[in-house]
Image (cartoon, rainbow, N blue to C red; front, side, top):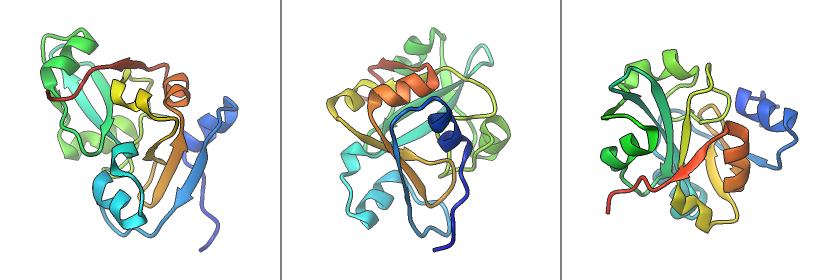
Length: 159
């Protein structure tokens, strides 16, 4: 495989001297976190997706969830201090974050949006998130993700 370019997420982790490893894999188009984990023989429970949302106030938020889980919008709104939130339409993801669908990560977005990591991540020593483009993953501890994004852990899953 040819030398891979670094993404904003990788540069930020390196600049902050935060421990992480990067994995590259073949990926031609959007595939969800669970399919990628299964394709690569990884634990889908440790694979996390980034969901971008917009609050009633118009503010944007990044919610990092287990790929196997569904987000509870009421819990997410409460964590963000919003009356309500909605998922950002797919067509707006790149203009808001700088990342494309399937390559979106909470680290290194265009702006420093508030980041909330589902508390289930704290059960693992290491989680897997998108590396900032299709075919790229970052392995890091939940604490490293929180440090890189100035994020907060919260209960975000459906019961």
